[in-house]
Amino acid sequence: MREQIEGSRAVARAVAGARPQVICAYPISPQTHIVEELSRLVKAEELVSEYVNVESEFAAMSVAIGASATGARAYTATSSQGLLYMVEPIYNASGMRLPIVMTVANRAIGAPINIWNDHSDAMSQRDSGWLQLYAEDNQEAADLHVQAFRIAEQLSVPVMVCMDGFVLTHAFEEVDVPEQEQVDAFLPPFSPRQRLDPDEPVTMGAMVGPETFTEVRYLAHQVQLDAVEVIERVSNEFRSVFGRESGGLVRPYRTAGAETVVIALGSVLGTLKDAVDDARAAGEHVGVLGITSFRPFPYDAVREALAEARRIVVLERAFAPGVGGIVTQDVATALAGSGAEVTTVVAGLGGRPITQGSLLGMLDDALAGRLGRLTFLDLDHEVVEREIARDRAERLERADRRGRTDAVGAAR
Image (cartoon, rainbow, N blue to C red; front, top):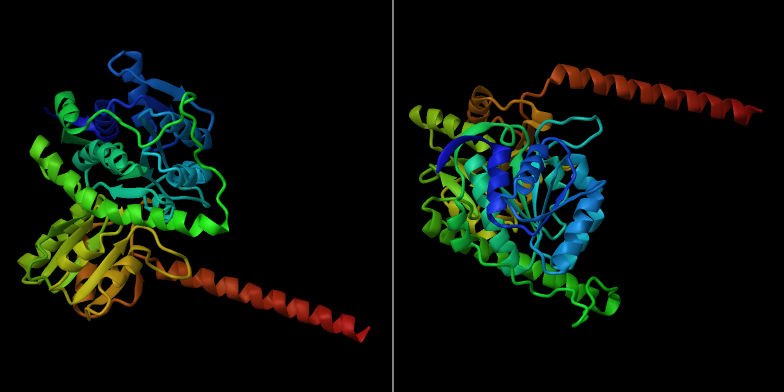
């Protein structure tokens, strides 16, 4: 049934439909409303689950690991600094092949402190061995959680479902919240690949020496490769049960015949599509490619979707300081040898609005060949150039003082 609902509550109800047996909860904005709604459902006995209030995000993931290792369907949620605090057990969860599902309400990481949206938090964990799925809107955010449990448990690998903090988590939209009967038809009961059992003892997460560690890491790589097919198939099966498109690897929009294509993840895709519609109406051959599965990265699907494009602009909500685009590196690998020009535009850091006007200006610059290898959208050049000049002047002054001090010392 479609209803006007906050994104966090829609996600919580979708998670509840998956019947998680253990929910590990530690509040951090902007994911707090998700675990609050789940706690309400448990208290009202609308959801039968062990709801564990923990003392930190590190504990949340640790409890999820313990629960999943004993064969329970486990779920948690976090954001930003909380995700960083649980990094050690995040790697343990993937290394032990535990099918935990976690919502990451994407938020900037500090310092400076910033509670608004960008993708810095999840991108920092891109090599952790977790799958990462990005939602464009609240409908997809709810749907991806149902799919995530299916994908995680089929592959025995943990999955992050990433949704833009505040922009989606706190936004009220019309969402067709998955019905319990549909979820039950789509998601079978959890049958773990292995579990801790006193009657049949096994060792999980044991120490591995140099003689076999490479093979263990190779298997982690292989399961990511296998996930590409599984994600696509689960999305197709979801459509057959729920009657709507959701999830998958990539989502092309007006890419047929497009010479210029903008690539992005998350909620900015909606604004991008509006900008592309305007540009198309003005006679420009432009399109959009949304990436839902960032890990594993769908190289073949990206290459196929961009076969006609000659100019690619990757719109990034995070970046690697001193290097540039993060998603860009994977896109460039996918398009190696194609002759397509790939540029990076960093936008929306720390929640700065990405307006349709700014995107249209970016498209104009791209079509005119004015974009450099790395561009920061709406950057206040006057402010940063003044700060750079001040910083360099202070460094020179400090170096000069050290030089005079050294000269005096030498003379003595």
